[in-house]
Structure formats: structure tokens, C-alpha cells
Amino acid sequence: MKEAEIKRLLAANLLCVFSIILTTTVPAFFLDSFSVLGTHLTWLCICSVSISALNIVLCLVLRPNPSPKRSSFAHKISRFLKCCIYFFMSCILFHVIVVLYGAPLIESVTETFLFAVLLSTFTTLQCLCMLGPNIQAWIRVFSKNGAMSIWDNSLQITTMCSILGAWFGAFPIPLDWDRPWQVWPISCSLGATFGYMAGLIIAPLWIHWNRKQLTYKSR
Image (cartoon, rainbow, N blue to C red; front, side, top):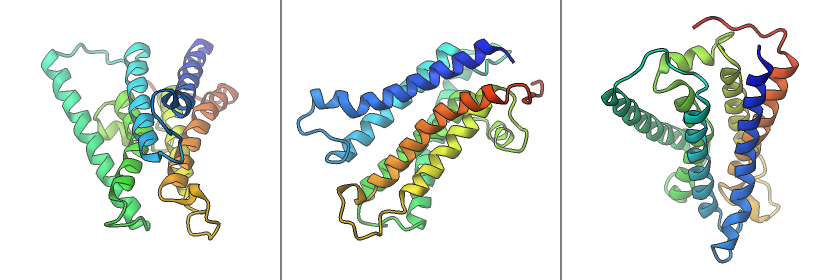
């Protein structure tokens, strides 16, 4: 395993962490009364768009899983449309799952859907950027010993951390503390965000620590 590849992964992940931090501060210079808690829906939109754009750019620049075959323009358009459909389906799926876990069904529909978009940005979008709209590749990566590169390992860790963070973030909601961050879905979205950031930092460190034990199958 090349140290240069791990350094590239670390640099990309730290850039994502830094961009999330910027979404909490920079908009305040352009939007009146902006705050993560006070204007949470606005922040959800800004964070989702910013991370989506950055992940797409990093994928195009770093090319973590390059295809050995050159594809035609029509194939690239078809692949892009499939990615858009998969992302939208992921948002709907997360929305349904969150509602089944207790989120309001009719009230706060916008809040729930934007939270689902954020979760899809932290999980599904990364899969689409690294693996494309290939469900078999997704199943392979998230199966036991299915990773074929350090990027696959990073994808596993960040996805799990994001979902666990969102789950743990739901614990304070029913408590009668009457805090602003207990309003749906603030604690869940912050939990998912902190989980995602933790995963971005943990992934390259874990890979570096276990680099001698990690072996990857050939594609």
C-alpha cells in the first residue's frame, strides 16, 4: 500500500471537513441572522449542496476508482442520469425510514426531507462518486472483506459513522430539556454531520494504522 495514496485520501477528507466548517460560518456574511440552529433548514441546504459539489470535484480530480475502459459521451450521460435517479430514490428511502423511526408524517415534511437529503449526501452520493450506479459494487464494498482499495475502506467508515451519528442524535429529542437543538431534526442532522466528520478523520488514520494487515483483491 502506497503512503502517497493514504496522504491523498487524508487531504481529500480534511478538505471535506474544512468545507463543512465553512458552511457554518461563511453564510453569516451574506445572510442576515444566519445560524446553524436558528436557520437550520437554510444550513441543511447549504451544507448538502457544498459537500455534494466538493465530492463530485474530488472524484473527477482524484479518480479514486478509474475505469479501465473509455466510455462514450452517450454512456456518460446515461450514467449521470442514473446517478441522479439513484440519489433521488435514496432521499425518498431515507425519508420513509426516518418517518418509520418516529419522525412526523405530515408535519415537518420539509425538515424531514432535507434531513434525508443530508444523509444521502453523506452516504449515497459518495457511493455514486466512487462506485457509480452499480448496485453490485455497492453490495460488494459493504460486504465482509469486500473493499478493493483504501477508498472503499474510507467509504465504509464514513457511511457507517454518518448513520450512527444520526441515530445517536435522536436520543436527546424526547427529553424535556427545552433546548433549541432538540427541535426536529437539528440534533439528528448535527449527529449525522459530526459522525461524517469523525469518519473522514478516522478512516485515513485507521487505514494507516492497519496498512500492513490490509490486503485488497484485484479488480
